[in-house]
Length: 208
Figure 1: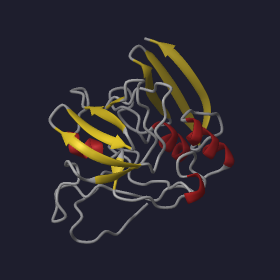
Figure 2 (figure 1 turned 120 degrees about the vertical axis):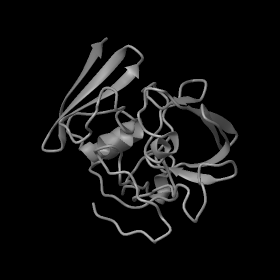
Figure 3 (figure 1 turned 180 degrees about the vertical axis):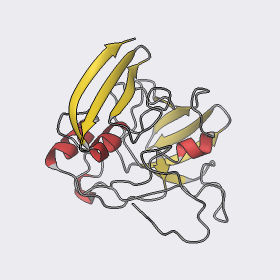
């Protein structure tokens, strides 16, 4: 997964450790529906010579699916309600402060809410989910189905889960290189995903 970036790009988070590092791009014909050839690695530039991309008036691209609530709220804890905002969707930043970032897709306004339980600096955390472009990654039919639905399936790859569900929250998945990822389906319901050889072998839900 080694990448070379221009000198004006700051160091990016590492994939499957403290932060994801690569991406998958939706084929143009199904941009709003499913990742068919993958979206390529995409990174927000942070605050180098290119300026702070997490600022009002900036266009960004989703690095993974997002899962907004019915009210359009996306939690930094990456709760997994039924809504799916597809990977590689272009979003327009309308406002940002120390508690939330507002962004727009078409006429719909969404709010990304930061959370004190996330250990990373907020803009670094945002860079896991928002980048500057879409790039290519190959996916199996099963991965594409899971990404389109925003749901895990036995047999999907770790990459497929990453794009379908986003980065696992570090309060319950402190090391994303581990063979078990956990997500909050809701505030008291945890989804446990177990990998063997980078492929999902079991999915369980637990009431906390």
